[in-house]
Every structure is written in structure tokens, then in C-alpha cells.
Amino acid sequence: MTGGARFWGRGVMAASSRRLTAWRPLLLRRVGKNRPPTVVLLLPDAMVSWSDETSEDSVLNISSSCDGIIKLLATMHDPNFNGTDADVNVLCEHGELAERFVAFEGMHTGRRFIGCAKKEGINCGVVQWIDFEWPDSMEKALAKLWDMYEETKSARTNDNLESSFAIHNLTEEKKKLQENYDSLYADVNALLNAQQERGVELTNQKEQKQYLEVKIVELETVVGNLKAELSKKEEEKKKLQENYVSLYADVNSLLDAQQQRGVELNNQKEQKEYVDVKIVELETVVGNLKAELSKTEEEKKKMLQNYETLKNLTCAQANVIRNLKFNHLKEKERLTEERLKLQYHISELQKSEEKIKFKLQGVKAILDE
Image (tube, rainbow, N blue to C red; front, top):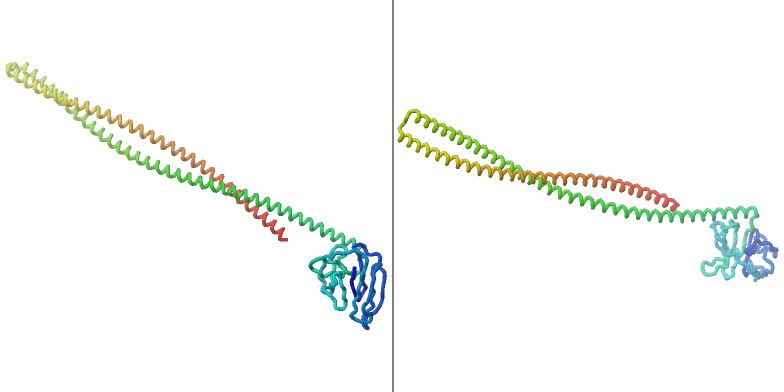
């Protein structure tokens, strides 16, 4: 490894990736009037040359046959030790001016070093260490602290993975709940549509019931009128029967009176003919009345038959309406129960969604930390 240096302060060390054990002092000299002495410590087989021993701007070129390279460690910002120093010119393997760093990695945490400043391409790593190695106890403490940090980092990574898995599971569960909610919502809409259709059917049934009630009222009116006419016919029949009985009694009384009084035969014949004519007339009237009564009886029977038919039809329709109403009530109770169940499922889904949102917020808060 080649390089150049001019250092002030505690000294300079060249090191490999292993612990430094083979140091040897090379030179003690002053550069300039007011500069402190410089101590240069190099690995074995190192060669040093100065281009001009008396110049203040001389550059120390260091080369070594050691093949060990310490990669550039993680660093932290130190305002008192960073960048390049015009008074200390150190070149890396690329022949470029090296920068000052403070290590922030492992047991080298806090040690100052000069390293390659190349940002792109191959970085030749640590050029020279400024500070000596820490004591063993300090190195062990730093190593333990960094192990604890790595364990914490690994645990946090595992927690993040578990959180991501939990978020994935919660997302899948949320999707399933959303699908169930959509399915339940569709079922509720279907039930509501069915209820509306049932409402239309009930409206039609109500209209039919009202129509039947009107027809029943009309039939009852017709039957009442027929009953009134029949009662009139019965009264007329009674009157005719009474007249017939009265005439028959009068004829008999006349015949008895004529026989008793000894009325002449001619007069009796005339009276008999007159009575026969009256009897024929009365029989004709009675026959007509009987014919009318028979017609009235037939009409009455027909009306009664029609009345019974309408009554049976009305009873059947009433039974149908009653059954439809009962079925509608049962269907309404079933729909009410299903609606309550759906409302319960919806409330459970909303609670599950709130829990999932709460879990997601917690996981998000953990991830944000």
C-alpha cells in the first residue's frame, strides 16, 4: 500500500484488518519552526521518502508490502475532525487526497482515521488510523453494545415482518368481511324488493276483498227485496184464501137459506147457475193464484240457491283471503326475523371492521415508530 503523510499530534499508525501488533518508530523530526514533533509509526517493510526535507509543504509518501486492506467503516459527523486538512496531506492508493473520518462501527467506534474519499468505484478503505486501539474492556463493551443494537435491529425487523403479515391477514379478513357485507346487503335489498312485491299483492287482495264486499251487499239487497216481495205475495195469498173461504161460506149459507125458505126451482136454478159461475170464477182466480204462488216458490227457490251459491263463494273467498292474510303475517314475521338477523350480522361486521381499523391504526403507529 502506498501513500504520503505529514501529521501533527499524537502520532500515526498503519494497520491491517487484524489487531495491530507490529509497530515500530521510524522517525522523529520537526517541520517548520512552530510545529510539534512528528512521530511516524509504520508496519514492517515500510519505506518512507521526502521530496524536500526543508520544505513546510513536503508530502510524506508511504508504501508497504502489506496486502491487508481495511474497508471504509461507517462514520459519524464530528465538526472538529472532518474533511481534508491543508496542513496534513495524505494520499490514498488512487493518488487522491484522503479525508478525515470518525468511525462509528463495532469496536472501532469513536476512533479517528484517514480514509479514501472516493464515492464511486472501488474505495481503498482506511489509509491510516489516528487513534490507538481502545483497551480490551472498552472493545468488549463496544462489541456488546453493537451486538445489542444488531439484536434490537433484528428484533425490530422481525416485528415489522410480523406486523406486515398481520396487516396482510387483517387486509384479507377485511376483504372477506366486505364480501360478506356486500352479500348481506344484496340479500337485504332482495328481501325489501320481495316485501314490496308482497305489498302489491296485498293491495290487489284488498281490492278484491272490497269488490266482494260490494257484491255481497248488492246480493243481500236483492235477497231483501225478494223476501219483501214474497211476504207481499204471502199476504195476498192469505187475503185470497180468506175471500175464497168467505165466498164459499156465503154460497153455502145462500143454498141453505133457499132450501129452508122453499124458493122456487127456477130461482134456485138461476141462483145455482149464478153460484156455479161465481165458483168457476173463484176457482179460476184460485188457480191463477196457485200458479203465481208456484212461480213465486220457484223463483224463491232459485233465489235461495243463488244466495247459497254466493254465500258459499263469499265464504270460500273469505277463507282464501284469511289464509293469504295468515300466510302474509307468517311471511312478515319470517322477514322480520331475517331482517333482525341481518341487522345483527351487519352490526357484528361493523364491530369487526372497527376492530380491524383499530388494529391497523396500532400496526401503523408501530410501523411509524
